Length: 307
Image 1 (tube, rainbow, N blue to C red):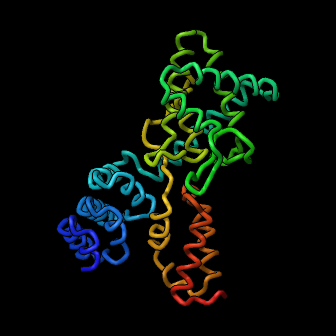
Image 2 (image 1 turned 60 degrees about the horizontal axis):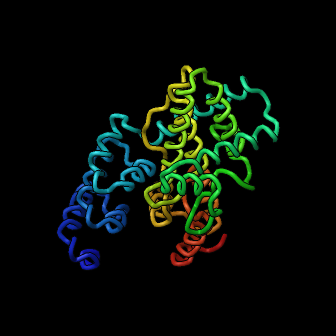
């Protein structure tokens, strides 16, 4: 009743959604999702029902529905026929992108710092040449914009940051840009080069999510590789499905506790161990420090001892 009163304009929709989940025995652990999106509570509940009946009500798939709650039912149905599967598609994209980079490394050999700097500078110059201000601003924000902050969970592609792993292959943004740029300028047809450069830039701009934040470096890399090489590197193809989106802090706790048994963890130390393992498997969680702090607060409210 308190939930319905908290969003009176959507009380009827929430009530229908709650009823759907209650019939499935899913209400208590999932009601907070409906409260986050009361306007689309019925749609979300229907999507949850589809996944539950297929035995696929899993954190990553739930997050996929939460990205567009108004289309939750359709997205759930698409997930079950593979258009796209949030886990398998992302893993497959990573592997294909890694294979493409390794192929470029093999054909181009080692690149000197001077060659890398020149290629990166040329790409930046190409961005500045764009007449559309929004495209220029978005690309520069992704490339070397403001550093990672509490509000902006992922850093720009270039800059003083550690290498990241793309399906087990270490990579830096400077090398990635340089190798793609050099490959495009090795194409025999200048028109192909120009089309591929436009595609590379367009796909790169897709690395800003629906919260106007940068996606992770793996996501930015896949978008760049797909844009630059699709149709131009023989044998390379990545479906133009969605790259995984960041998980906002208000969704992370709910996803964490979806796993059976976590609410029964008896100490804060054990909760922290479980949380660190979960974060390692879910790098798209924004504000991971805040997530850990929230878990500690949860443990305190539950009266859990430290050890």
